[in-house]
Amino acid sequence: MTETSGSVDTPAAARSVGGVDAGTETESNKAARKRRRREPPPDPIPLPGLVDAHTHLAACGGRDAESVRAILDHAERVGVGQVVTVADDMVDARWAVEAAHWDRRAFAAVALHPTHAAELDDAAKAELEQMLADPRVVAVGETGLDHYWPGKSESCASPDAQAEAFRWHIDLAKRIGKPLMIHNREADRDLLDILAETTAPETVIMHCFSGDRNVARECVDRGFILSFAGTVSFANAAELRAAAELVPDDQILVETDAPFLTPHPYRGQPNQSYCLPYTARALAEVRGIDDIEMARILGDNARRVYRLPLQ
Ligand SMILES: [Zn+2]
Ligand SMILES: [Zn+2]
Image (cartoon, rainbow, N blue to C red; front, side):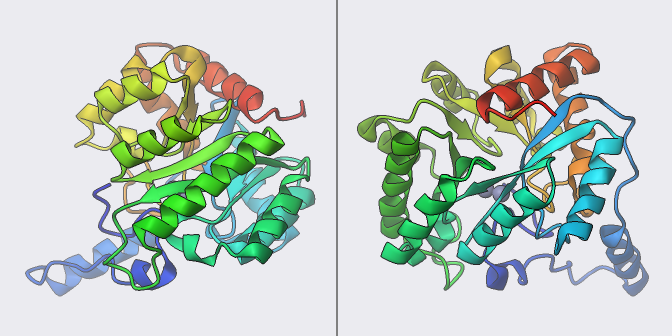
């Protein structure tokens, strides 16, 4: 990930150091850029049947039932009928489960994010297990490995703590029979090795897939689902597009990972589930198919993988 104006799933402390402008920029340029960054992208042309396979409703401004409804109403107006909201820590996990009960269009995924792996004590384990018994909680995630933040953020868990927590989440997904949703940042090899040696759960979702075509091929061969975010539409993402091209129809998902990773040409501006059609269309273009057909494939896959009820 090369994002400079805020990064994916970063601890709050680390997040605030992002977005530093180059010193050479004039004051008015800076002000204009700042203004643009706060501006939400315009609504895309609707693309029916989509599911946002990974978003963070709380970080998008969701606080209570009313604000969550407003975000989901907006998404639904452009064809995004269901979303999976993902937790990073225990406070976020409790909130995500609540949000999934406030609105029939929201489902939750809970786990301790790799950067928070050190918080996985017995109490957290018991509470996560209990949350996952809830039918509105459709996946164990996001878990995995993040080799980018250790050393850069003091609050980030060490690679060893991350690996240990990852193994526990893998086992949990297998025991409860729900999909494992994986966060991978600069940890391709270690992550694939742990999944191989522990035996992966039946359904593995590589959220915000960011690998090259070789990693994509290996994941596809192992039967994993690859979920693409706005990064696939970025100008410098040729290798990621090559990866998106080779994934079979039944192993591909689309997500926003909002509020970050807003698709091109709105990169750096605030992201929300309503922006998903931009990324779905980027995937349709990469794969050389009609956007309506692409949306049908992506939506059907999400409903199958997460076992979402029909609306
Ligand atoms: Zn992530
Ligand atoms: Zn995320």
